Image 1 (tube, rainbow, N blue to C red):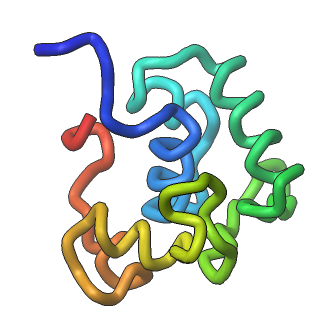
Image 2: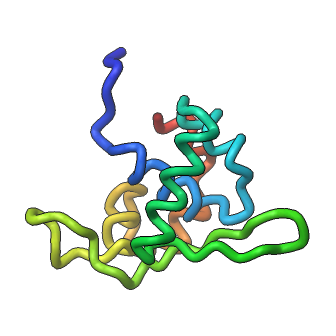
Length: 108
């Protein structure tokens, strides 16, 4: 099995949060094989860029992926986050297909 991935850690975290908006960073880190500090940094990067909105829910955070935004990058710049997520999970409806994922950890 290769030690690399087709998707960056940022993309994998975004996909994980789309699947589980109530995820704890420790769970994100464990599922993706990264440190909790890396997960924290990536979520903050995504939040600063506007791709994820963090909301406090008691003592926990809830994450909302902003699927209407365009994906950055020269090759797929006219693609929305929703379209990218739909492509990755193999369905035309990103929200419903991401929720239907059995586990992001199984995909990585």
